[in-house]
Length: 468
Ligand code: FAD
Ligand code: NAI
Image 1 (spheres, rainbow, N blue to C red):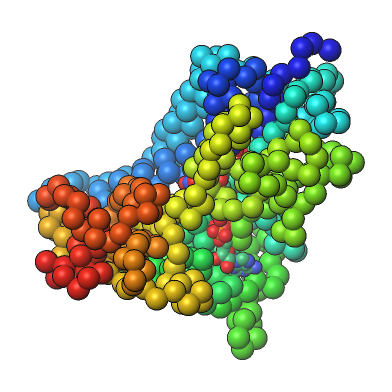
Image 2: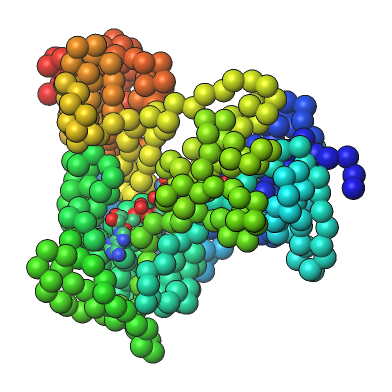
């Protein structure tokens, strides 16, 4: 066998490709094994990027149809060319996945094409698309195999009528009625896409509010706005059975509290009830690699599994299933292997739902602070009182800052509003630096920008917002 690599990463998603590139930057000899025909993993191929391309296009469509008259722009009839919208999405994806390939060449990372299984610590067996088998040696092996959609028992995904997010990124026509199971990230983002393009969307959520893991003010606020745009919600409702019948699908629903039954008929059903870690076919059981109780690969702070020389990062380990979290772990793992001491502050990892308006969050929610008995103050500021939101004609939502009462340290920031996903970066930086609400309040924020709402919310923590 040839000289071993310093690092072989299994999986070319945001966790894996970043780990391989960062390792190469640090002088390690790195390879990345990916079985898909393109690099970039779930995120670039069937996740973050195609969904954001469709969100952008559908938002432009909705705006052109409804939103421009108040700006004095009178358009003629606005039509939809869905095939062109999909082709644009595919071309964005192709550009970005080729971009990762370019970065591999630039950094001298070898892309080994095929499906990997760990034969033993230090040895990875590779099966190419043509079935050819080979083996590579590695001083360290990183598992970055990501996740896949969770299935609902009894509901078979055919990616045509009953689809996962992958099918919902590629419908060839707008379904007249779309039922979405799950009021989380995917249900709300892709539900928004198809609602804007004309589908009658109904979101069925098991719990009593959408975005149940975020601060409890955010989900209901988003629900009110989406409902005004025509999205229907069935909360506290579970799907007990479902079937595809010819040109439609029927779901049998049951209320969680009362047990009443009802039926929901739709032309397509999107199942978006979470994702599960991809641990199968890697030979983990034979190697004795331990999983935690949620089925993720168990790792220590340095991403080491219980088997020496085998590491894991990204969606396949604990923590939020987010691309930037996977990328941060990829860098940190490579730095660990190169002898550095990186540290990820998990509490400052932001989360963004790219609906309109966007929802963004970092740190602890009010409920979490109450549960742990922390004494805190709340500063809240609405976009209606933010001049730039007025000029843009986008005044929905607010910024909410939670700060510890005694120290004034920022513990959580929760935003619903225009460009919340960009604004949350300031809050994440503040938390990384252990800033106080006073630090944010005393920082000059350009006028007129949406970020002034952050400054005003920080002032509001101390009861001294100027414009509200
Ligand atoms: P993945 O990206 O899943 O990559 C794993 C790769 O490993 C895959 O390419 C797979 O083919 C490969 N692989 C698996 N097993 C093997 C094997 N045995 N041999 C070889 N290769 C293998 N996150 C965000 O932060 N922002 C978003 O806007 C966002 N939008 C999303 C939208 C959708 C519709 C979905 C589904 C997800 C979205 N996510 C988003 C989540 C994000 O995609 C994941 O958190 C991220 O991709 C995880 O990265 P990863 O490297 O751990 O795994
Ligand atoms: P999710 O965890 O965000 O939401 C799933 C929702 O389904 C929850 O509200 C849950 O209560 C509900 N649910 C679970 N079982 C149900 C059932 N049987 N019936 C009805 N409702 C049920 O999962 P989702 O939307 O599938 O996305 C998976 C993951 O992908 C996200 O958690 C996130 O990590 C990632 N993602 C991130 C995005 C972003 O960063 N913008 C966008 C899309 C996905």
